[in-house]
Image (cartoon, rainbow, N blue to C red; front, side, top):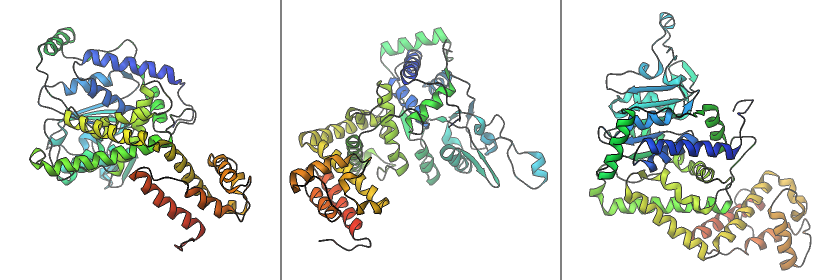
Length: 435
């Protein structure tokens, strides 16, 4: 993050991004969900992959989105099997080569570009794709002895087909946002496309007001939770809901693959990598931000379908929404959200005690800066008949409070089991069971 952050106010940034999304939708017909998805990727500093048949305006969509920004370099290339890494990272430095060192001159390459578009990415050979992996994920060029940071913010890749191999599977994991263009056949949509072509001749239109790249970068810092001034908060119960929905969707997706393998000839199972799993929090912040909020609400969890399904495959979207509705109804009908917030605050308090063992030598209800302190104090007064917990009563207080939780759902029961282990570890490090 820059020492001097870009002048920023959330409401102004929201207006600018909404205006940009609207303009791209007017220019690129019938691609609203994909456009929303790609802007989400850019706000998260992630990459997007678009698959479709030839002539579906994949490159036009990428160019139109990139044209919305100023102050950013754009690297564009059409992949082919004959290409070597220097196509993406710059030609070899002749002077360094004379010294026996293989170094790339990165000027005007992907390394020194904020945005990139790689057309027909799976036409590239595995050696080149392997070299791209680190640049896309670590934002660095690491080839041999050369290690330099890369300015890459977001890359959009396009393909007419998927090529399955160990390398391409790893590459696909770098493109956590994926979309499939289904050709539009409706007469009205075809008329709109023809109308836009006559107006713009198949070229991107430059908006009157472009977004400074610095604004995108600053907003991205906020979305990723690394900005010093602003933050989009995520309540505990929303995190719990999101994790529950994601796990349930993964289970249901694998069940669908197992029951209908003929519909998934190249897929053995559906796997959400830790990399993609962790990005759910950023996607929740994107959803809240684009809806004009600086706090995530449970309804934002439904928008995780942009991240965990292939946009354009209706069945995947419907399955995710069904999973969301099932888990949400289960948690709201059983009062589980209140219990979740209380339990997660308690877990946070246990983590604090693990890191600060000296705190156990003082009344736990008097520890400052912990949200659970007041709840513990109220519970102790009502249940144990005391207003303060002495040092000797700390253990009794924690054990008794823990037993007040109700395992209203399977997920809560699992959390309680692990929380019990945390309490045991707190009083008996090394695995001894307290009684």
